[in-house]
Image 1 (cartoon, rainbow, N blue to C red):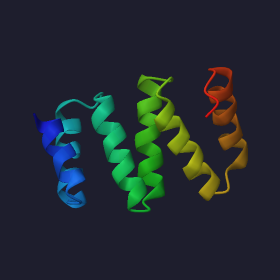
Image 2 (cartoon, rainbow, N blue to C red; image 1 turned 180 degrees about the vertical axis):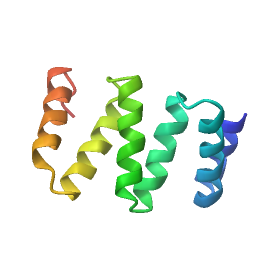
Image 3 (cartoon, one colour; image 1 turned 180 degrees about the horizontal axis):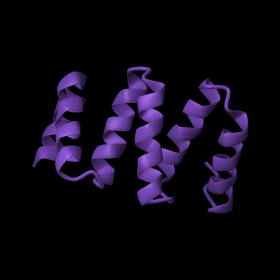
Image 4 (cartoon, one colour; image 1 turned 45 degrees about the vertical axis):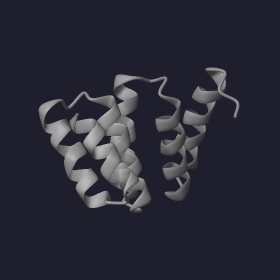
Length: 100
């Protein structure tokens, strides 16, 4: 229910409150991939690139095939001019058959 609450807040553009909910979830379960991914999206939309990158990296440590997290990680790496790291993640996606 708590995750659903955060998602509803996010959909209502109540981003600060949604961040608090997802952060609370992660206090109780730091391995919650859905909460990490959602928090990463919120951080990215707030241009908090380092925080978003950390969230997406944590998601990928737990599930290396979470393609949306990897795509978002690539976008952040490109903004940060970290092209070699971005290329490595893009190659991972291509090797996994993700071509969109």
